[in-house]
Length: 183
Image (cartoon, rainbow, N blue to C red; front, side, top):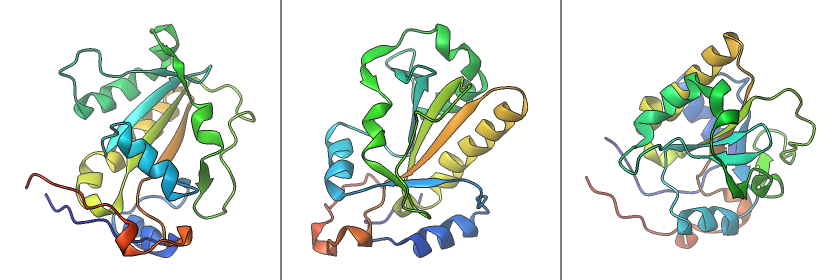
């Protein structure tokens, strides 16, 4: 597994990385509007790569049915996404959390969920360029599972969230926290 310390990224560097792994240009990539929001996610214990699921009302539904479940359960959960609206959900975690915090990397437009119609489920896939090939084995594979599920009748809205530190935030490399990796 090749994992490196994060560095400042740009839309061009992220697109080059996605092109290297043949990720469709049709996939809308979102980023946080500022370092503050990304740091908040890390403080809240986010793991990357990982995914978060929300029902059609926008409430969080945990794919981890047992405490021992890991992100290997994401793919099967996507496949059964139509049942997400019958599962228990967390009223304290709503997808609207992301609306004011995320922008589309290519267009700079804010994430707008209120315009979405006929959605069965939402999935936020968190990934980062500095994780290298780990994205291929997880995040990029999950994109394919979402596409396949949608081709088979599901209506899943994908929010592909890049969790790299952005040069556009006017920060320096010194502002990026040092991560400890078990190698």
